[in-house]
Image (cartoon, rainbow, N blue to C red; front, side, top):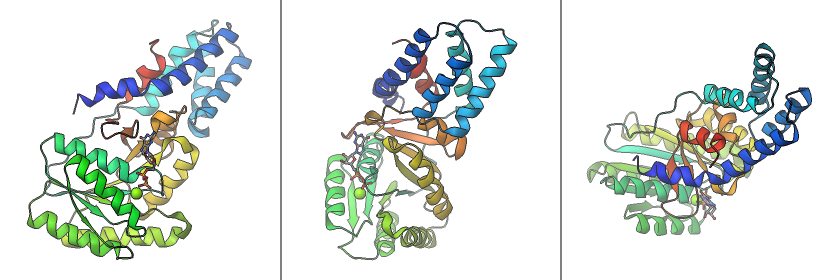
Length: 305
Ligand SMILES: Nc1nc2c(ncn2[C@@H]2O[C@H](COP(=O)(O)OP(=O)(O)O)[C@@H](O)[C@H]2O)c(=O)[nH]1
Ligand SMILES: [Mg+2]
């Protein structure tokens, strides 16, 4: 999947543009390092969705190190900041599909975050990788939702099992499991509803769906991915906690990173949730997805490109 990284580098340009622009303007305004400059850096990080916890830690460490190193010029702060972000994000590995058949991926998230679109993109990645892919349309709340999944299935060259409006999502998932197993599909990706005004019901529905799937195949769904909208910042952290409690999220996909000027949420997710960001969505087209890499992300912020 390494070729997808290329797109990632360029798609991050927006985050990179905003964040690194803001940093360079800060350095220009404050040539000398002082508390005032540090205050502004703190504001900048909070304003970029880095989150209070990670920001406090970063600022305290920088203050400490700056004293220790008798830092005078403000631009020297950049390398300290880079080290801090590198440390917090830690090592990230590009996600590799586990060797299980079928691989069942349950995709959850609030309405409008980008689940169905992301599933289309994922199906496309797996198809490019030579895998057979089945999609399960378990968002039976609205007919339009499954029609949308239909379109993505066709674009990606995947097959689909879907329920009629009002059907029990768990029973649709069960049918899809049967088909995936009997026809020997490599991957089954399950699309779900995400209407949040019935939060409790939504979580119960997801739990039930997951239970039904694991009854049919112990261990499945092996992956439970949460799609977060990068433009909603800290609300995403709250959403993730909620979904994680219900179905034990194994990975996060950060959609709409292209529309967000605040890529800092990646740092907040790592610090506050410790759930890996596996992919990022970088546009509305089928190829606008990329595996997440901390290196590319950090490069994007700090390299002067
Ligand atoms: N710019 C951009 N838009 C996206 C991305 N992913 C999804 N969208 C848009 O977000 C909207 C909601 O997406 P959808 O997949 O229907 O969300 P769902 O309700 O969670 O299934 C649609 O207009 C998508 O085109 C992305 O990575 N970038
Ligand atoms: Mg949808």
